[in-house]
Image (cartoon, rainbow, N blue to C red; front, side, top):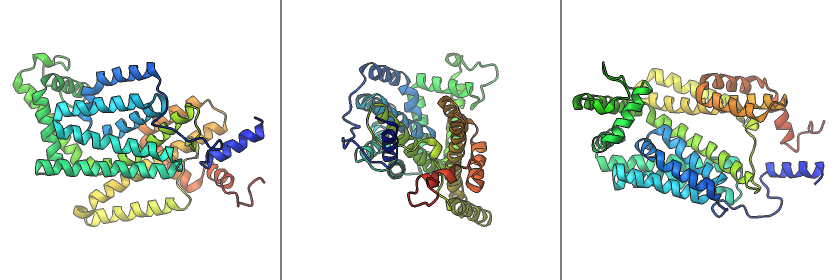
Amino acid sequence: MNVEQRALRAVIWQEGVNVDNQKVTVFGKKNKAGLTAAVIVACLAVSPMLGTGVFLPQVLTTVPVLLLAMLGFIGPVSMAACSGILVVMCSALFGMWGGLSAALLIAPTVIVSGVMIERERPFWESVAASSVTMFASMGVVVGLLSLLAGSDVVTALAQIMREMLDAYSGIGDMLLTLMMQMGLLSAPEGVEPGGMAALDPQVREQLISSLVLLMDSALRLELPMQMATGSVTAGLLGQAVLRKGVIAGGQQVEYPPLKTWRVPKGWGRILGGTLAALYLLAMLVPQSMNTMFYVFSGVFNKVFALQGIAAVCYLLDEHSKPKAWQVVVFVAGYFFLGTFAVMVGILDQAMDFSHRREVLDREQNPFDPRRGA
């Protein structure tokens, strides 16, 4: 295949067309036996920890992305087995309804993400479908738990956590130890974080109460925002890792590189104006608008953090830096330097300091008279 043919194929892939007319297979692809076994063993090892935190918003974002990575890079057996392990663990910890809730949080997003690829839908359309599915799943589980508990979902989750910690003292001690080592709980005076077995039962009960109170406070503030941002993140990163895995397996699917991700021109003003309006409303009528402002600000920050990361990755690629640098930028910007990434993203939207919008818009618009100039 010559250079022109490779370039044509790359352009067609970017538009989401399968040039060889071969059906894309996600759920029917071959499994990598060695990696499948290793992943299942690892999932069994960490399943108690994941099971205790599967209903926390941050974990909800991580689990579907990890399962989709397994589906894309290793095969459907690893994904199905690990999903089953998590559902069984949640059933053991929280009862039948806990297992059902875990299944509702995992299965729909994974299935919709895979189906969108098998139907060769465009990347951003698939992201939207996966994100909406994740948000709907969260809403169903929240409603189910509230109905069963006869109270709001946060109170229900806090009560479930307390009952689980009381029923499984070993897991509870492990979780309390981890929380103290992370600095999220204060260890009682004279007690080392690693010495949980020697704790007085009253001290242990005090720590459990502090943990449940911490969880209750965090969820009341974070749950609506984390549902929105977690859905966007799970949909976007889930589609990204699944498509990269499918491509690594030799199949052809559309996958716009991270460096090209950007908010469409003009939408920056709409998003910024909406954020400013919600901020003013939250100042005037905080009882009614605080939650809405908090939710929208979370989505706004997530969108522009990704845009900032993409802009830096574009500059690195333009300067022929190794791909590993883009991985470092993504991890640093997404997990550790989120505020800085948001600032870079807003600056890129306002000023196009990377000049990527000018180049990408021209390259991807066949009717632009400047194209090829």
